[in-house]
Length: 165
Image (tube, rainbow, N blue to C red):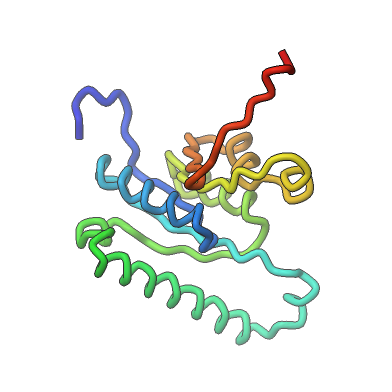
């Protein structure tokens, strides 16, 4: 680690939703974890329709969670075999899967597990789509006690209303 760095991160949280934005955030989080020799927690929050969830048996819920975890493990294996994740990186990475509203679960996980940085993707929606869908990243940035790094999608262009003054 660079001795000129005034701070360090020890536990980094990277929420993933399997989108291109979260993939890019994952690579960024791996780089930060590598630089700071920090633990990296990959968190997937399954937001399900609660009407459907009430009809699912405990066994079905566990089976679904097991499949999600296997899928995450396979993806990490692929990244490691492609050279994007080293053996040393892999030793610092752990996987967590939970259910609920993503922004709430991300904030709760970070707070209860002493995470000092959250690295997450943002889709960059604006206008009506942002109003209707909302922004998980924006909610996390506003409410998290730790630092939050938002990773923008490839091809993102900034939009500034210069007439607004």
